[in-house]
Length: 316
Ligand code: NAD
Ligand code: UDP
Image (cartoon, rainbow, N blue to C red):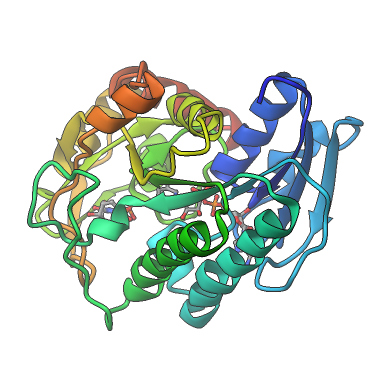
């Protein structure tokens, strides 16, 4: 998208969505943000509210939306396990009905639509690192299934709309991403550990802490999303977007304690059901198609994220 466009960002009031709105406006586009504020916050976009290039619609994407836009980023969906399990039926509806509504709009308008899919597509992976051609290992009846299967069904819908109606789809599988504007209480590991460390409270390790994740800094992810939207029509994905540097939760906790100079101790809590044991993206495809690779490594990204939480929580 080089010329000025009007771009719809669903979930634009959330962590990733608000950074994407900033980037698109910086690039000279008009942005319409549609959000029901289930997990997002007006705080994340309040700096955009007076900007003539920015419009905010309070809208739940499980309901149809009639707009005229040039491109759609579909990010609306709670992403933290605590939040997507709060109302699991609504999570499925957001994934499935939301996808149908956004695909319907893309079909009517003949515009590209990007789906924020997830590494959860791979479930508890039997293949490591995860490549896009791995079909995954997912429980369809567990507490995580509303999100995992919802997102899998959304991918199915994207590819069926593409095959049946020639809709220009862009499916990205996002791996654990972190940065400013994550909610301090969202229950995800990076925000939990940073808040606990800054408050010198015990750091809650679920299970034995040997499970791994690969953490991508927000600016790297946003670059990947924009590059994917700008690809030619034949590029559909799915494409993994994530940082392949893999860490155990114990390593993450120790690094955050070091960077915050915290007195926190580690405490161990039960591992949630179906918690994936390991996760690391193979990003060869993103390198080839998008010439993309993460630039910000964990220590640097955490330092910036800690600064953000320290200032919002007013903890010195
Ligand atoms: P987030 O919870 O901060 O943002 C999601 C936004 O969507 C919020 O503003 C929320 O209010 C809104 N929303 C939820 N349900 C909605 C609905 N029915 N209608 C309208 N708005 C709704 O989460 P995030 O981390 O910014 O994630 C954004 C997207 O990226 C999600 O689709 C998520 O599945 C995907 N993703 C994120 C990660 C990650 O590590 N952050 C990893 C994989 C995939
Ligand atoms: N986790 C943890 N302590 C916490 C929160 C999460 O040990 O306070 C673990 C969780 O069990 C999982 C990993 O950290 O193994 C990542 O969890 P998160 O909820 O951030 O995302 P997920 O990748 O599981 O969707």
